[in-house]
Image 1: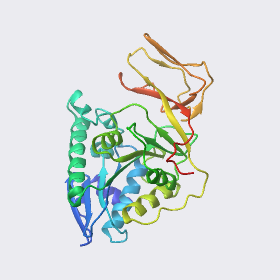
Image 2 (image 1 turned 180 degrees about the horizontal axis):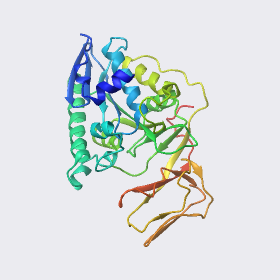
Image 3 (image 1 turned 30 degrees about the horizontal axis):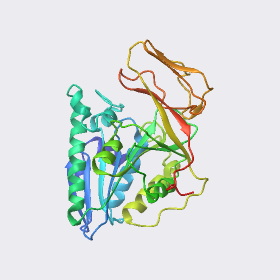
Length: 331
């Protein structure tokens, strides 16, 4: 693993060979397109490192890429592997100028030019080119899994975030999330600037952000904890059967309200170390700024991603409600 990480950090991934049965093309720095020689019916984007200090997903993606390079991992469908924020990865930082995962869907045009604004535009172009290439044999099913880790503890070790979209996700996609060993599935109800919202809204992809544990340094991750996600991605791109789930089905949540910090005089009334998915008491004042207060509703008491330190205009937390699985969600 140390060698593959060093190859990423020192710009050597583009020298890796791939079997003759795969057509390998680098669409941008850290963005590898792989196409099998046989016809495909699916195009999958797998991304990691959109936040540069979230190392476990980067290590998972490097392992999959190495297996493909060595001919140990079959490839039956079009695949785009994305290492997102390369300068931030090399610096060991979440981002350098702006949160990259808030800049997609053209939102990069609204911030001062910098590392992340340029990268968001570059990744949008690479994804568009990939899906156009993948459709050259006729339109195919489109998928996107964006792998992350959280900056705090969680009552659910692994969970998926689905962007808001018109219509339902298909049953096969929910089955994929279940096979990935997600403990919870959260569906957004409003648009956002995330990478997955962009691929869902712009290209109709079945997209999800997968949160895999906590932020740790390279070499400190126990990747065995995320074996379900690793095995599911490998099965997906090989057109193999998904791995069997060995635990209870994931719990399902909907976002009830976003807490948007719109004033520098903003207070979040929570322990800085509170876990994601903690249930708060109904009526509790969770946040305040001069023009607004947020009170926990009885039907949506669960807090996700609380962070008072975000930039003005950004999300400082989400309030969730528990929901029955939608009809297309398999048990």
